[in-house]
Image (cartoon, rainbow, N blue to C red; front, side, top):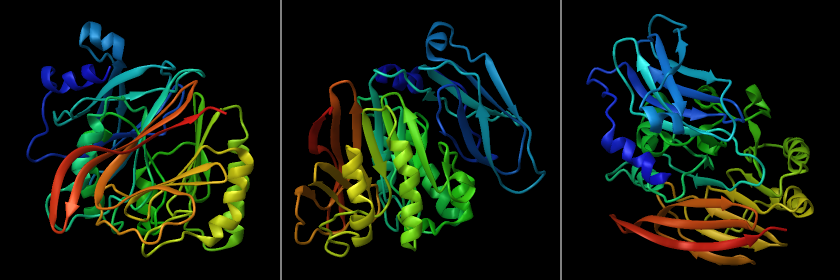
Length: 386
């Protein structure tokens, strides 16, 4: 499967984007469901566009993308961020798609997947704290390219927040262009970091699974085969806000899925030299509920390093290695099993009937001002199914 997806880049030509492109960045996908997906892109000026798509087996047989969804622009000038929902898809199916603009521009092809049946394996990638690059090389792009070459074809990508340094147009454009190597192949599902500042531009850019809070997007839950993933906003300012989210999460995590995962930006526990030992509020309010509900993995960023911490049977991962400047670890907190500094990385997860397999893949090592590309497994572990 993965080999075929990459062969599409090499052996199939669908056209290229012109120098004076109306397509500012994208396409990307979001809000994956059993029979639908949402395709997003940014363009200036707004143009009529088509998303052409087909199931992967059909495309392999014919080389054609016969299904078409048309988008008519909502404005006549300026920049438009588009979200076009494609419905009536087949469940448990890989699709191939491309974006065609009325001026003749054609995007590179991409893929997405509809939700699998219970009992089937689920694979996904995790990245956090991409932010901004003041000096070359582009570490975000390095991580994105490595994720695109991972041997597991990811069903989706989770982002643990701080996507951008500041939620302004130039930073969003840099993010999407840098992440393009992996966003072409899998939907992106982020949570808010502190650098997003709860900006309207964050909500304008992403189509997310059903949720709540501001615009129904501040927190969300993805029910995907045997996996449920709950995304929360740890930027909450009051205990009442934290409790409101937690009560909503309890209902989502109490379903039939055997694998339970939670993601939010600020770590509950951390050995980071500046942010350790973690958030006292989250330790008091959220951790006991995660234990009670039998959550398998809790993912966070904010601390720009890697750490695996086990507390009361819950595995916490700090995964802030997506490209932002890196931080040092300090005194290791109770339950810290693995801690890694000075590496940019991503996390690959596979959940199946046996349990959850996790690989933490180093992409670059940083020594002073020098960024050294690498491919190194920084951590690897397995959580048996309860």
